[in-house]
Length: 67
Image (cartoon, rainbow, N blue to C red; front, side, top):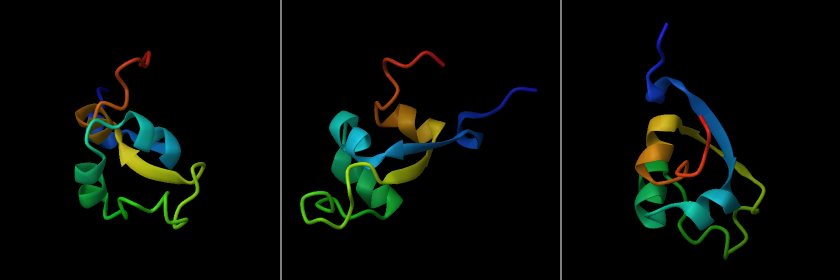
């Protein structure tokens, strides 16, 4: 059985996502996150966000991963 990338969920540390994302503002808009949440203490760097693999790929988060 083949899975679609949208069916594969990831829980990634928000600090990692912020650092490696190709468009942080766009991703925040899509996931309903505060773009300046790390700077304002709303989120901690190690807090995890749930994202599907398709979205992670679209925002450049798994460029160097072995999947």
